[in-house]
Length: 529
Image (cartoon, rainbow, N blue to C red; front, side):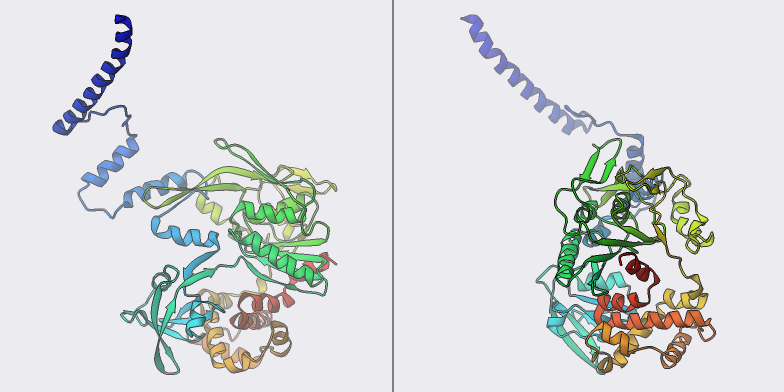
């Protein structure tokens, strides 16, 4: 009996002693201010101790978290070029691009002559519903914030105009030599990743993807299904300038082109499980002829898609060697609202190619590698840079290479003769965009009579009159284009036509007009005949 009582009482007694001990310990810590801890490991690294001391004891006041950010950036600079720290103030904008939408008023603007000019108004968007027009100049926001004539920065203007859906913002615009107040109810504004989708020939479709966001696969499927209803039997897919994004979106699109359970891409890292992306369903376009356009700025998810299609002999890759990013990042949210985008794995094409270019010479050298391609002539003559990585054989016996981007099957040179220094200045200073905007505003009634980019291209050809107007306009920015070579002049007039089309129909208009004179697009059409 006594043993049974002891068995019951002993655990209770121990629990009481433990509780009292904990209480005494915490009371002692409060009174002594000592470093007594209970059931915890508070040992800090030397790095954390130094950061704490600098933040708490340094002679001068430091901006909040400034030391932490410097240290973080320095640590990441010793890893790889794509592991980055995203401060809390920048995170929303970074995430919006991948989400495929943001909350705002639905306008495109640019600051010319220290004034915010409305370049485009999203059809059916909040600003269009409120009566905002192309050509309006915003001079005030919410009646009190003056943004004209004060050297306002684009980011500052965005912060004023953006806000939660259904919230209101009042703007004052200058239109027809008078002020006009407009109240706008903010809404969800899409950030499309498919720039344009149309039938470029009676049987060939053209789709351009500018990034891989959360909405890309859905946008692509909508575009492809629409073109198939118009008789599409072959496709030109444009990935030029596409810097990548969400890997899964690229894999889903690859699944529409590849059959069976073919491998699309797989990833491997030292501290994460390996993962394979394979085809899971019957694709919408598994047999039709396919050409993919790439260039030196096609990266990451673009290279995943192009690499998978090349490895399986599914598409003809046309253009120039891609960027060469074969590293996978994962974004980790930090407690202060910032985030770390950390490289966790490498990705490999179906044949096992890791197409990441070397980065062992530092971040600066890595980022300047594209410039070297222009200096050594690779973008002009494709065979000046021989493949350095291992060779792999496709099912049809073609050799492809790893170790530095996707090398196209058909090379198309970059025409450097059309970009003399004076023409470059037009782009760098924003002079050309400013001219196009002003030209549109001054000729709006005439230009808006055109019903389609195709009609516009046939009936409007910039000539000597427009060239002289541009020459005079450029002189105001101290740019003299009066003596540029004939080839550069001809190319710029073609580009001017496409830019005016963009002003009328946004990206759809630009590409439908520009593609008619684009040599890489012509190669793509030839490849799928």
